[in-house]
Image (cartoon, rainbow, N blue to C red; front, side, top):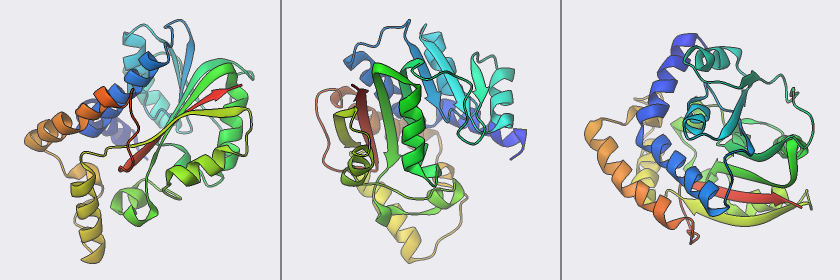
Length: 244
């Protein structure tokens, strides 16, 4: 993809309601588990590193890694520090280097998701946290999954089954999220599929200032609750793991 794509995506990530609330949810989880700001945090699959920059602005010791050289160059060009390119799951960091690893909507892009978890686990210190988000429910497969080259969507049972391959990773929290907007999102996905509607490149095209404000207000309520409760269904899944 060309650099214009990553510049555009950087701006979308900055302002789109879904990205903004997902960031709030991650900050809420970091607060819940009392992650100190001097701990090393890796955003794995960081794209052009917007969230890494946000972590750094809050004084977190944050790093980002992505397979795309152009994405990393875009982030560095915008002043984000500690961004590195990954090459086919080969990383430039030693084992047990990070206290926290974020894999936010990443492993669904990787054909061998078990190998992805294995590599992330190696990079994680003992007593470190692995925080994963993934899209939920295969029946919600749609344009967004095609546009972003997903291999699969998950349920809480399937993502738990994946993690069971690694006995030293203990599940601390397992919940769906984007629950309050689940019905309209599901209806759009299903109607687009049933009516074969392909008039947009991705779900991010369904957006304007009014929709952005309304959806942000509704979805952001979850960032206040998710520290204390688990949701039984939703558009996405959040998993918090701790390495024994």
